[in-house]
Amino acid sequence: MKTSRPEDVATEGGRPVAATLWDALERLASAEGDRGRRVTILDREGGRESRGWSRILSSALRVAGALERLDVEAGDRIVISLPTSFEFLSAFFGVMAVGAVPVIVPTSGRSHGRRFSVSQPSAQTGREVGACGLIRDSEGAHSSRRAPRIRDPFDWRADVDALLGEVSADPLERPAPTPPDETAYLQMTEGTTGRPRAVPLSDAKILANIRAMGHAFDVRRDDVGVSWIPLHNALGLVGVLLFGVVHQLDLVLIDPARFLQRPVSWLKAISTYDGTLSPAPNFAFDYTTRRCRESDLQDIDLGSWRIAMNGGEPVRGQHMDAFARRFGPYGLDDDILTPVYGLSEATLGVCSERPDEPVEMDAINRRVLERTWTAQPLPEQGASSPPERMHLVSVGQPLSGYEVEIVSVDRRSADGEVVSVGPRELGEIAVRGPSVKSQYADDRGGRPIHDGWLMTGDLGYRADGSIYVVSRLSSVVRMREDDRTIFPEEVEVFVDAVDGVYAGRTAVFGVGEDEATADEPIPVCERLVVALEVHSGANRADVAESVREMLDRHLKLEPEVVECVSPRSIPRTKSGNVRRPIARRLFVEGRLDRRDRNPGIDWVYGWANVLRGDVRALGRRFTQRISDLFS
Image (cartoon, rainbow, N blue to C red; front, top):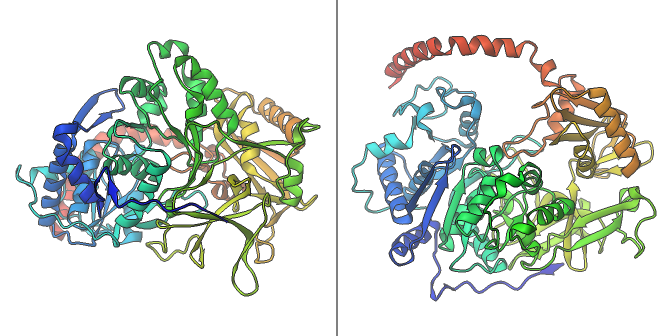
C-alpha cells in the first residue's frame, strides 16, 4: 500500500485557510484590488469578456437575493443547466450563497432555444434528486416564476437575467452558505456504465482535494488556468473553476463548442494569456494534434505552459508523444505533460505523476496480461512480435493524504475483508482519502465501499510504487474459446487508426455472455463485436476489412463481428466517453445503427423545421394558459 504524508494546510500564503468555498470566493474578491485576478470567457463565436471576481461575487449575491424571494431555503436542490458563461458563475455561487445545493447538468444542443420539456435531462435529474427549481439559459427558460406542475418536477424555472432583474444593485447582505461538512453541491457522474448518479460533495471534501492537487502541482501565485472543459464535468468545475478560486488564480474559460470547432483556440488562449495550468482528457491531445493546421499556428508560443494534466480517461503514451513532437517547435516542453487519475466519487484527483519529469512508461507482455492478469515486463530486447507488446502510462502516486490499493476483483475474502494483490498483479483500484464519497444522493446504489475503501471499478496494477490503469472492470471481455481477456480500450486505439473510422467513436464488447457472479465477476462471452462509426461516403466493406487486418497484425485478434455504423450511432456521454453497455444492448436488439433506430427521421426533422415557428407561437399561448391555472 502506498500512503503519502498528509500536507499541513493550516495556512495559505501565511493567511488562515478558507473553511468553505464561499470564504475562498470572498477572499479572492476582496484581494482583487491589489492582485487584479479576473475571469476571461471566450464564447463559441470567438467573442471575449473579462470580469473581476468582485463583480462575479456581486452578481452571485443578487441571484441569491432573487432566490430568497422564490422561497428557496438551505438544503433545497437547484438544477443548473447553463453553458460556460458568467451566467453560470452567478447561478452556481448564488445558489451556494443561500445554502442551497447546486446540481449541475449539461446543456443540450438539440434543445437550445426551445421551451422546457419534461423529458429533458434537466427534468430527469430534477426528479431523481428532488430539485425544487431550474436555472437555465434565457432562450429556454422564459423566466417563469411558477411552472405548471403537470409532470414537471420543478416549482419554478428562471434564467439568470430574470433573477438579476428582480433584485436591485444592492445584493443580499448576509449570505448563508452551507456548513463545511454538509453537501455543497451534487456532482453528476459520467454514466458510462449506466445512468448518471449524483455524488454529494461537501466544502470540506472539495477543499481537501483542491489543496492536495495544488500541493502536487506546486501551484504558484502567477499561475494562469486555461480550460475548455465543460463546467458540468468534475474536471472543469473542481479542477479548474473551484481550483482557481481556492488558489486565487486568473482563469481563461473557453466554450467547449469553440474548442471542438477549432481546437487551435485552446492553444491560442494559452499563448495569448500566458497560460500555465491547463488540463484535458486524453482525446483532446490527439484531437488537437490531428486537427490543427500549420497555418493555424502562426505566432503561437506555448512556452508559458507549465503543467498539462492528462486525465478523465485512459492516458495514451502515443498520443502524448505525438502532441509533444507536433507542438515542440512552438515552445512546448514535453516534460509538462502530466498524467493524472481521479473520479467524481473522490471529488476529483487521486493520483498524479510528478510535474516537470518525463512521463513514466511500462512495457509489458500483452499476451501474459490477457491470460494471467500479470503485468510481466518485456525483456530489454523488446517483444518478439507486435501482439506481445503493450505500453502503459503511469498515473503516478497518490496525492497527499490519499491511499490507493489494488484488490482482488471479487473484492472480499470469506470474512469480508478487502484482499490485496501483489505487485504487477492486475486488480480493481480501491481508493481512500479525505474527499472520497460515502454515499450517493439517490437510492440507485453505485460503486461499493468496503471498510472505507471506494471500489472504483477501474482495473490496474502497481509497479515500482506507481499506478497503471488498464481498463474498466465492467468493460473487459473474457472469451469462452480461449479464456483470453480482451481490454476494449486497447482494441479501440488500433481501430481508431484505420482510415475511414471516426476516431473516438468505437465500441468493443462481447455478446452471448453468462451472468456475472461473486466467484466469476467477469462474464464469459461467446462473440467479440467491434462496432465503429465510419465517415460518410466511406466504403463500409473496405473499412471493415482494414479493421480486421489491423487487429490481426497488431493484436492477433479476430472479432466475429465488425459492425460499421453511421455517424452519431455509438452512444456516448456528454463528455464523449463511449457507453459500451448501451452499445451492446442496441446491437443485440438490432438497433445500433441510428438509421435502423430512426427510419425516416431526416424526413420528420425536415417537416418539423418548417412547422417549428407556428408551433412555438401556439405553445407559448397554451403554456401561459396552463401556467395561469396552476399558479
